[in-house]
Image 1 (cartoon, each protein chain N blue to C red):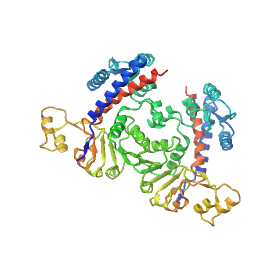
Image 2: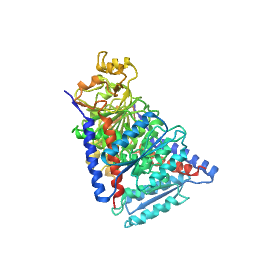
Image 3: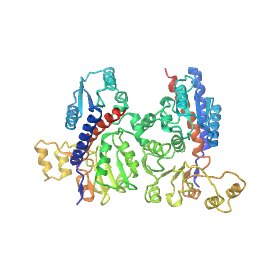
Image 4: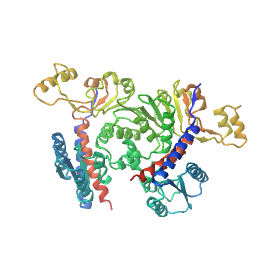
Length: 305
Length: 305
């Protein structure tokens, strides 16, 4: 039977380690890490994300501030706030929740965050250091994937890893991290030809293209390890039935109005794998845990004398 | 017969285009691009490189300055010079010739160059923007490779490209550029297992690991395109004979005291390819041409009103 990579349990360990680190930092330097979350507009999902990140901070002893700006906020006002947070001695990490309203240039806003406080690892200077193998703050989801693979002792050196998806947030940074772990990495994307055949070369498959259940068993080499970064809410009963089977409990859940989630990997792939990250409960929880660790790290760096 | 990708001729075209751009910039804005080359120490090869870059500048109408510092120069003195060049309104590009003597922290020196003048594309902020597909200044050798492939109409979209070598200077940035050209890119390195078999999947092979003639015909799929970034000076007649054949003219050249060069690709691979960059005369000349184009670009950006 394949091993289930339990992201929830891993995230719990990482949160405990982070809480211990927070306490130690406080004891040594009197500094308590603080995350400032910035949210512009009324997107309900964004509000949920920010609240859950703030709550996660509390649980490990990281302080936080929420800055909720109206949907009509102008770019210059947002930049002014970010400048103030960059200069604040209280704040160690700045999280700018995406998406931003159209009147704001996303790149300009993200670039304005001080690299030392860029806990999402999106600032070009942090991304460049990641390429050069010397980044201190790295995007949370790729970090979560690496952490999952390492803590489950999945061998990477010399192994073939295929990353499907080339986003700035996941695919590209993750491919670089995996390469630094001495894996032989192939990056696939929408223009890749014969995708199933390319993916089936992999000892480790990372699915991060945001296409529900696109990866089917023909993509998977017997015994491969599957890391599924995708998470989609299924919209129709038909979809649910097609993916999970017409008589599955998921169909009942859907009818009962529950959210039915699926990753980029079709669940029928699991049996062919030697280990996999489930959806939900795989990479998702690790992403927030890594945000906490990044915030601690930023505070540790800042407190260095 | 395979097509020879004539880097010398391509470089000549790029130099002409650059010379035209230099003239246009001067006409429009009165600005003449200027490259400042900084060299620390007595390494003879470095002196030759700097001289040839300065000479190449002259040929396209780019001004230049050489700053030759003693091998005993301290880090703070070098940083002071770089600061001065960063602030100089005359200088648009700064080239810090490597290697640097041991008393100087290379990373610190490179990081101190203003990203806007970083014509070698090594500053983390430029590297990060490269990852994000929005860099203006990109490392010259990878740029040269892309240029060669494009000008010879080598299709990249959806094609499998294998990059052998993962250096900050070539392998990593080139893999990213090729991915942005919609290729399916695999990066191999010293820890890759079954290297010949992995490389033989490639429609385009890029060899950039600095191991003379490592790539032999068993690595090459019939009809693949070969880009050879490596360039090594062979040290013994035995090596020359082993690579080029005991009765080749290269052996005579070696005996006559001439430098015999070889790339990372064994010349016996060429016949299997559909096109290849020779060594010398392939990627080498393109690297300097790209440095000139980068210097022009930096001056164009700076002159924008």
